[in-house]
Image (cartoon, rainbow, N blue to C red):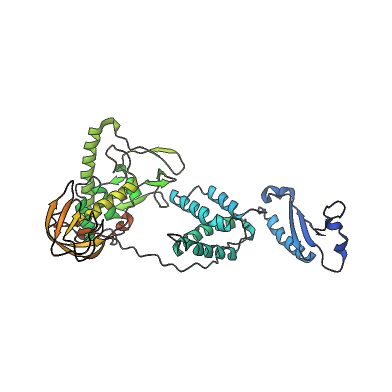
Length: 459
């Protein structure tokens, strides 16, 4: 391959107003005038790989600089590397995301959000071949600066997630020989310490399961609490994955959300299966649940149907033999599982909820439904944090399920609508955080207190 160089300028013919290019007489003068460019004709056999018949470069002050830049292109041409030309970072990110077919729906949604909200607005116009560390540093500083005016400004954790998306995209560009190195590799991110997850203690799990006793999903919550299964994995659990003889449950699918729709995807494991050990107590709980489900299915008759979802390839999959379902047999929405869990957890230790604001010094407090007899001393909680105590001496029923409580003495502080009266209320936890309770070896057996009964369960 031969490197061709030439010197051109932007001067125009005064008569035709056309550029003189390399015909300008000033190019041969002693004073610097015009710029050098280079040209390489790509061999026919490499054109399909490189994507161009001719490669050009321009804007060099000297012929030596132009030649040096052209020589740097020769190894790439010989290697069959695709020439990026003016491919923008925005166009590349779109191409990259479209080609990611083997990622989970939640990951795809996260990548798409980061690209749409941050990467394309701040880096999209930069040519991919010219993208470097300074561009990325400036973009992250813009995220911090512009976010200060928002109600929920993006913090270091958001920047770290955006950076992970960009780094993954550019790593693929390196692997596919589109760029020589990943410019995101050397970017220094703001300091970030992820918040520590504090799951419920064992006795709190016991109190929650006590409150859930009799609920249709109680066996499901017990399974999640004692095995650490995610909500989607439990929603996708099937009876044919249960090995009662060996006390093992194999999870082959999970219910996940993708683009506002639900799908049945394999679990997050290399084999596409997840195995969990079950103790005798859990096996007994599941056996009773299975009998109840069989009875309910027989009463429902032919309308019992687990439903149909799409798999990771977009193909429909008819669900069968699900362990946990809606009353009509349809699969459970994982979001409903979380919401229902919070409804149950909120009742643990709760007496009632304040229905109207009451100023300090008041003698009475209006509340909604009472879950326990209110005549005693209660802790007052605001956003699940204790703010004081009140002693209730009398409860007078009002219309509906509400009541007016008489306070001993006068109310020592203001009460707001939504404040709660209770004893040792459970703190708010995400369902998956609660599953993190499982911290002891699988074969260990530890005592768990549920209500007034102490029993031994396997975790």
